[in-house]
Image 1 (cartoon, each protein chain N blue to C red):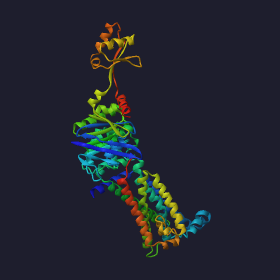
Image 2 (image 1 turned 90 degrees about the horizontal axis):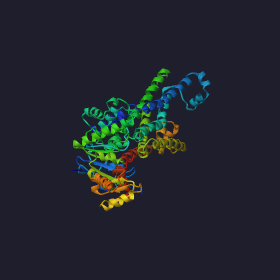
Image 3 (image 1 turned 135 degrees about the vertical axis):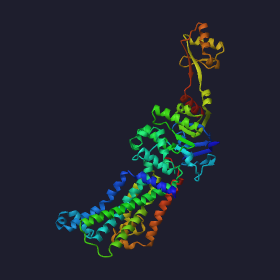
Image 4 (image 1 turned 180 degrees about the vertical axis):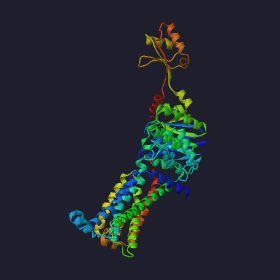
Length: 301
Length: 262
C-alpha cells in the first residue's frame, strides 16, 4: 500500500518554484529519505503533505485518501517540521500534555512511555526554555511519536543532536520501521540519510532530480583505483597496453576505472612491478555521498 | 464537544505560567488604585492642597468620594484602558504561537483549527471578564477600606450594569485583534493595531463621530466622553457587533485557508 502518493505537485511562491511537478510514492514500512540543499523545497513539500500549504497544482494522497480539509487521519501521522519549538514556560511533561489533549488521546501512560523512550526522564519536570538544543529536539520527536503514528514525517530530525543522539534517533527510526511504521524524512546530509533510508529522493530547485534505493546509490558512486609510480606517464602507457582504462589526473595520479581493477587491485601492483615501475601508492577511491549529491544536482542544473 | 473541551484544557495549560497573565492584572489593577488615591485626596483637604496636579485632575473629572463616582471611574477604565489591556491579552493569546514557533504544531491535528481558535477565543473572553471582575473586587476592597458612604438604594444595579456592558463591548471589539496576530504571525501587528485603534478612537470620538467608530463605542458607553454617550444608537452597537463578527470570521477563514509557512 502506498502511504504517501503525490501527483505532479507544484507550488510557487511568487515566481519562485518551491515544488515543480513533484510525484513521489512512499510504500508502507519504507524509510524514504528526501534530500536537498537548504531552500531546495523540502520543507515546502513536507508542509504540503501536512496540509499547511496548499499546492497550486497536483494531488496528495495519504493512506490512499486524498488530502482535503476534511482529512481525518491526523492521529496516524506524527510530524516534526524544521526547528522544534515548545512552550518555554512549560515543562517537558506539560508540553506533551498539551498535544495529548489536542490529539484526543485516552491513555496517559503514553506520555511517560515516550519520555522514557527518548531519554527525557531526568528533564521531564524542567521547563522547555532551559533544555539543551539536543533535548529540545528530543522533545520535538516525543511530540511526533507519542501517539504511535503509522506515518512519521520528519524534517531534519537530527539537527542539534550530539553524535550519541544521532545514533539513538537512527536506531529509533529503524525500530519504528521494523514495527511497520512508514517514515518520510528530509535532510541536507546525504551521509545520514543513506544510513537509515531504504529509498532516497534528491530534490533541487523544487524538482525531483533523482530517486533511487540505497543499493542503487552504492552502485552509482564513482569508484576508481588511484596509483602513483616514479614514472606515471610510462605507467599509463603500460596499463593501457594491458587493457586497463588508465588516465593521468590533474593531481598527477593514475586513475583506473575498470571493474576488474576495482575487484583485483593486486593485479595492478603485480603488473607494474613486472614492468619495473613499482607503485608508491595503490588506493581505492570511493566517491563520498556529498560529492555524489553535488554531482547529481550540478549535472541536472 | 469533547474535542472542544480538550482544546480549552490545552489552552488553559499553555497559559498557566504565563508572566503576561499577572502583568495584565497588575496593569489593569492600576485603575482602582488610582481611584483610591483620588478618594484619599478628596477626603483629606490638606492632601488636596499639596497634590496640585492630581487634585486638579480629580476636580476636572468631577470626581467625588462616593460609590457612584468610583464605579463610574472603573467603568471608564474598562471602556478606554480595556481596549489596550484586552488588546494585549488577545495579542498574546493569538500571537504567541508564532512568536514561540509552536503554530505549526497546531495545524495537523485531530482537533480542528477552528476548535483550537475557538478555545483561544473562549480563554480570551474569560481572561478579560476575570480582569474586569478582579478590578471590581479590588475597587470594592479599596472603597470599603476608605469608608466610602453607603450607596443610595437602587444606585448600584445600573452602575454594575454599565460596568459589565462596557466590559462586554470592550471584549467584543478586541476580537479582530486575533486576525492581526494570525495574519502578522506574532505580536507586532496586533499590538500596532491596538495602538492605532486607541489613537483613532480618541481622535474620532473628539470629532463627534465616535458613535460610529467601533473602537470608540466602549469608551463612549463607559461615560468617558461625557454627554457623547447620548449619541450611541442601535447603529453603533450593530457596527460594533458586525466588526467583532467580521474579525472572528476573518481569523477562522485565514487560519484555515492561508498557507502556513512559519
